[in-house]
Image (cartoon, rainbow, N blue to C red; front, side, top):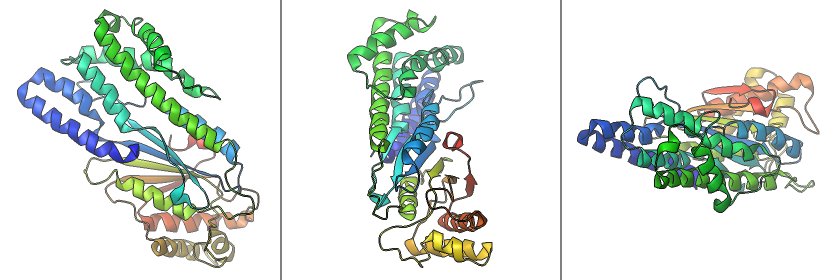
Length: 356
């Protein structure tokens, strides 16, 4: 799983950076370029496909938020006056009958940032601050090489490009840059290959997600709203970010009515969030029950990862709670998530605002 390999990849980059620093100050700048991605800004989007909400419309809105992060997902190093920007890590999964078995679509990961900046290091091994500014702008600026190729991600139906089609177009964009066009043909080929490999990989993953969410995947007669299972799986993914004391962050956006129903959960179970929200006598009781529910399934997020959860659509759907009970439902999930180790729980009006 691409999600699981990020820390080892970036740890190796930091080791390489330390070794090069001893050898050469100028080379240290280049290694810093490749090693910048130690901090991770990860986003996990969880979309409810249980049939309780319009999952097709939800995906359409979620896709706007996802593609907005693909304009420049690789971040950039902190060198001199160049401000640091962490790379973006975006994955998508779903709430389903058994959410722990739902497919995960890693759209873009830190491995992509490593490979992209690794190509920059290979082509420009001793970059000054001034040179890095020009490279960054011509490769990743609003009118740069990456932006020209990333336009395909915003299309409603993605056609995954071939390498043969992508490389000439990318080389043409490279030759439009005042600085990049002066490098030799072999170096241009390295950059074009790195860009096209990322474009093709992201396009494939995004198309897979498009195909999966295009039609509801849950039998209307089945119980398919395993929200607790989706959160449990998210905690496992979050564990991959921890352990390195590097300030990693994870935003989890859940697009769901948040009415947890799955096989084996009785109508009066503490895991039945709808029952709790309808019967709780106070917000404090609903919150305490949510905390007990989290303990009952053993969900625990790592303490060394800053985690926030954004909920979109709570209390909506085909059979929503009475409006005066939505606050109880929210209190339940606040208790559940806080007990699980989530530091911040928010709501958003739409998915394109989630994890912004």
